[in-house]
Image (tube, rainbow, N blue to C red; front, side, top):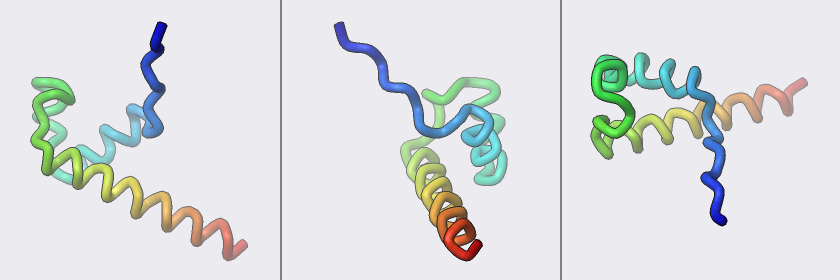
Length: 61
């Protein structure tokens, strides 16, 4: 039996990114399946940027 992989990004982070990137209303009204592929890509790109910044900040300590 195959189990579904658990997402890496928390739901809260995804919602914050959707707000930041301007497609939160689509998610709120229609769900994640309604966002454009471009928006999903931008969300992943932004999450990677945030993770990289966090790594740099952690290394400076």
